[in-house]
Length: 338
Image 1 (spheres, one colour):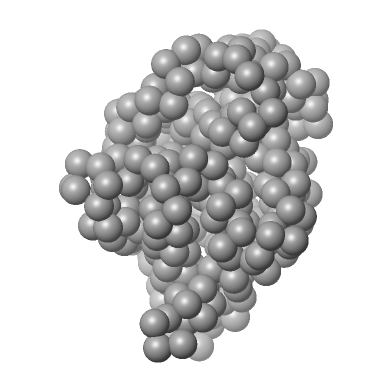
Image 2: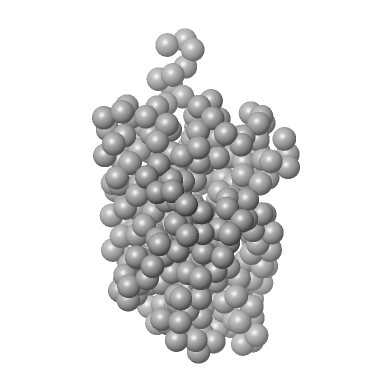
């Protein structure tokens, strides 16, 4: 139970901690000042949503996300969101590829070559089908979490731990709803595809509570650190580098490598979600379908990393509010007493 639960937990965190999150850009777009309460609410909402998604996929032993959508909103409306998830996964994977190119620019690798490298690595991963992705997450994500927390704690120590939580200055709490909603569709896509592999209800508790607490804690610490460099963030494509400028150059190289790996895991998760759905129409080995998808995405990365996130992420956050409401109401509407 614990082993599989941790495997799903790292899969969830690997889906979340990608180009937008690990770079700080996504957190800065939604949170910032007066957001302590918002991040606490996000932790609770995220934990509940993951638990509901995994419970539905477990009961239906699903192999892709459509059975989960059918349970949440009925067959007619799920057709609309089926198309929306495909578009969402496609566009966010484009963002991951763009993020891979932007990250490697730090070590003077051309943007276009960086996107080709990360795309090629995603295709190679699917030579081992879906098992390659879960194994990779279980290895990479703990390393990334440890390094990211260490960097943020060291930065806070350098600044004298100026963390504050004023209960009368929490006006940004509604952003918890849009930020949680933004991340709902990829979770439905990924967790809906592994329902047949969940063997015990205990795995759901381990994965949902563990991922919620870890992501909530990192989000709070990260947001507080970004507030300390708020005046410098506009100068950086990746806000994390505004924090890393206080460290030796080798630390920037190490975190750039780990950031790239985080982007890689999320790009792989996006392709995994698309691939599990596309197998209803496309036949062939997983790596070949992945190559086909990456080839279509590559030209769209020319729009740039921060531009794509600034436009698409808030838009998806609003559009996904209905899915968030459906997830939160599902345990109530389907309670045995009703």
